[in-house]
Image 1 (cartoon, rainbow, N blue to C red):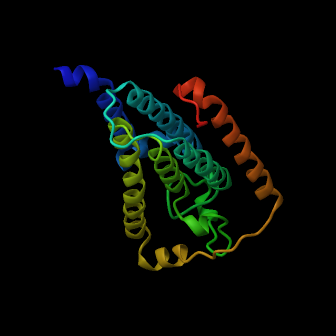
Image 2 (cartoon, rainbow, N blue to C red):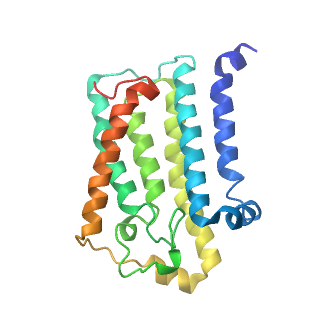
Length: 221
């Protein structure tokens, strides 16, 4: 009973997170939701729900009992400061772009493996963002609750890439999968790309400024 009282919110947040990610994405459920709100509406709703529950998990981890796994040093804070900027750029450069290889893409029928943008390098940009976020925050958070959170999300992102690859290959068929996944890896500078780069910088700055008010911890050492 004492464990439930001390860790109850933390456990509940994780249960809600995995339910909120597993149920809406099931084909039988998603096929009923998409006709009602459209693919774009589904992506926005799914992203909003994911962000809200993820925020709850982080807050719950901060309220859980402190059990040290490794100690904190000032230099560790620079890991999230640096890598979250990269994560913000990956997000801004790929969000809403056609991507027939993963989830989160829009107008996927327009996906061109010869001109895929940053998707050609990453294939699963949203999972790459999750991996950058989790591993970067794992460094300065050495207590048990945060190690569980960030460690699981890092593993979840890596495993998710393999699962999605396997699922997409099965759905598309070997020939189409090989055609789409053999992406051209080149970087071209366009007006839209510059705008997205600036947007990523704005997102990063906003996250930096609201981190302390929302999470309750300053990102600075």
